[in-house]
Structures are given as C-alpha cells and as structure tokens.
Image (cartoon, rainbow, N blue to C red):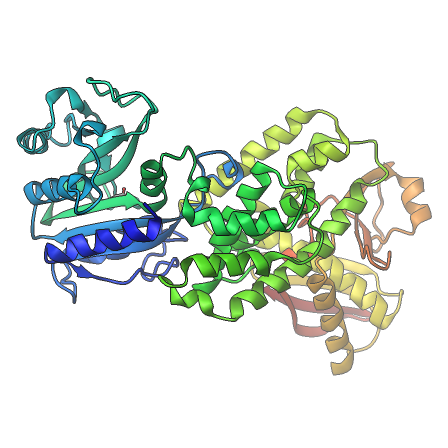
Length: 577
Ligand code: SER
C-alpha cells in the first residue's frame, strides 16, 4: 500500500468517527519557545490538551510534519531520519480508552481499511509505578477485542509513558501497537525486544500534567493523543527493511542516482533525508544562518552538498532534489511550491561550495592532519570526518572523537531547547566580538593607514571598545568605509586560523601587535586570509579564542567614535545577528 493511500484512509476512517481533519501546523512552533521545531503530532495541540477549547471541536485528526534533530550525524543508516510525518487522532476531553483502542484495532485490521492480519499484531501497556497505577483498563479492552494475553506485554515508564514534550506539560501512560515484519510466522509469545516486532502506533492516555516541581497532577481534562509515523507504517506494511525503500523516498532517490554514476547508499540517504527536511524548513520560513533553526538548516544543506561531492556531484544540484521532494509532497503541502525555497537553497549551496573549496585547499598537499584539525574541518566547514579520512591520514583520531562527543552533547542540548543564546559555544557573543575586533583593527589600518596600532581593547556581551593610535576625528566616509570592509569580510565567511610559532618567525611575517606589548618567545597568532585572493586580511598576536570563520560574527556597526587622549581615538561597535 502506498503512503498516500494510508494517509487518506486514515483521515477518512477518523472522519467516520466524528473527527474534524485539521491542517498540519508549521515545523516552527508558534507558541513554544522551549523547542526549535515541532517534534510530534501533538506538539501544536498542547494548549488544547491543557484545556483551551479548540475551534474545531473535541475530536481532531491530521497528518503533521515533524522534525527531530538529535541524531543528524547518524542519518544514513537504516533507521535514523530527521523529517517525518505523524498521523494523529485526538480526543480533547471527549472519548477515552475504550473508543481509542477499539478504533485503532478496527482501522488496522478491518479489510475496509488497512486489513492487517490480527495474528501479526501485539501490544504493550503500562506496568505501573509510583506515579501512576498499572493500566489494567487498557489491557482489558485489548483482551475483549480478542488480543490474547500472550500478545500483551507490560512495560515501565521508559517504554509505556509519553510526554511531556518539554520539561512540563501533559503526559500519561500509553499503549503501543506492534506489527510483525518477520518472514516466518509471528511467534505466539510477544517479545518486545525482538526487532521483528515494529512499533507502529502509540495511543497516549493523557491524564496528568507534570508540573515544575516534577509532580504528576491530574489534568483538567482527560485526552487521547495518538501518533502513527507515516514512514514507519508505510515501510512495515510494504515489507521493506528501511524507510528509504518506501514510495516516500523513491522519486527523491531516483533523482539523486540519476545525477551520478558513483551513487553510494549512505550518501544517497543523507542527501535525500537532509534535502527533504531542508525543503520543508525553508517553506516554513527558516533561512540558513549561524543560530538555532537556521544553523540546523545550514548543517543539513552542507552535509548534503558534501556527500554529493563525495559521489562526484560537483555542481549546484539541490534544486533538482528539491523538485523531487515537491513532486512527492506538494499535493499534501502546497506551501512547498513557494519559489523562495529554490532561491535560498541555491544561495546557500553556492556559498558553501566556496567554503568547501577552501576546506579542501586546507587539506591539499598535506600528508596528515591532527584529530583536532579534522574536527575543526567538520565543525567549521561541515566536512564529514570520513571525507577528511579518505583524503589524508589522521593523527590521534581519539582527539577528533573527544571533540565530536562534546559537540554532539551541545547540539543535543540545543535541540532540546535548553541552550541559552547562540547554538554553538564558538558563536558565543564574546568570541564573536573578539574576531570582529580583529577585523575592525585591520579595516582601520587599511582605511586610515598602518600607523593605526591598538592601544587597548575591552569586550563584553554588548559591544567591543577599541582604542587606537590616530590623530584626527574620523570622517563619516572613513567610518562607513571601515564598516563596509568589516562586513564584506564577514560576508565572505573567511576562515580564522590559529598558529603557534617562534616570535622571530612572527616578526618576519609582520604580525600586528598592540602598542608597547611584549611577546613571549613562542607566540600564538590568529590569521584571517582570503583564500580566493590570498590577501592577508588580518594577522595578529593573540591567544584567542575566536570564531572559526568570519560568517559567524553577524552584522558589524560602529556606534561611536571619540577621542580618548591626544593622538588616541576610541570606537565602540556592536554586532547583530
Ligand atoms: N505523542 C505521541 C507520540 O509522539 C503520540 O502522538 O508518539
């Protein structure tokens, strides 16, 4: 059965049970600042699950686009993906377990609907703990419908409890329905650990609210929240072993394969998953950037381009994949027809292509790179580790893995919405100001002359303050020339590189220092070089830290220019995202 047939049957079935079909909400949550994306079908309905009346009544059903970004780096295997769709039906203080369970069973087994053999189904119910009792009620309903005791497993909170989606909110015990995908006949006794039993549907009985103290208090109204992953059910019913074999991916994968004679399974899957997600994200107003949602989008696009390049696709191609995504989905999601999606994809693709070439140039000619350098390539340029490893030898790989683990923890926290401020630690405001200050110093020297030398600098979260040797007030033209130069360098997204070297060598290179500063025998230098022209934009003695590429800084603006003392001027400048 094709995905669209399952989707349509599902909606029709619940209409016959008095449900109103509501549209999919945006991937960008409207009223929830605690998470970046809509991660479950029930997510947009939280206010209504908490008791607010829904304009369409108490029985609702839909398909909802969702995005989970905890495991981007795992995509490419058989099971991980980012974007997915959830079929859901809800009772907002209306029907309860009896109807919910028997309707699910009817939809799955009746030949008018999915027509699954009853002998291929099994269920789990909540075993009970200190917060809530064993869910005997659900088990009894299943038994009444004819599900044998041997096909009912009782599990704890880890398996049979859902929510809340954030730290607090509606939650409760659930009953999950499993489908046998094995080629042999399904065993009499259900073992939820056996991977041939695949979970296809989750019916949550929301009767609690987890409050800020972590206590489970009864909800004002008892709700039913069910979720069935469309990819998952389509794959299971089709007898496929991965979602990529289902019709949802066929057109997209065929397109990718038509672009190269070197197609390779993992790369194909990564491109298909990432560009499918990116297309939906842009349609919902996300644009590539260095923060939050925009950063996730940027990462997805960059990974897709890098893996394509690995298969020999070395020209802009994202829009061709996007067209396959649109062809697959636009009947259900007309917003995908928006022209701006192509523009954003192309812009980001071209920008990244330049950066990627820079990264490749950084490896070229080298026999080996350190684990830390490999990580920097991954982090700054989205260069997958395997690609670096294919090109050069990697010394102390464990350094890469250690850094990678830190990074992964950080993005997990970020996608759980608990991260304050910027998404990655390197884009922390102070660090961005620090690099902006180097660029400002370089721009001042270019506009006013090389007599400009740093006299002092002070950076906080709000601004950078920079004192320098110069004996006249800056004209408006000079200030605007400095701003323009700095912003051009930011726009070019130049790599920022750190080197450690003997002081004599640094002196020979003409590294810029601060007025009257003494440097030790071994110095740390930060260079910003334009890889296209080889222009040394900035090269200063500095301990860091700095952003890894200038695109992370944001927009630079001079706020104030004044005298500090005779022959010394002061600039206060800010950056904005
Ligand atoms: N909220 C539950 C889930 O995401 C059921 O919709 O599985």
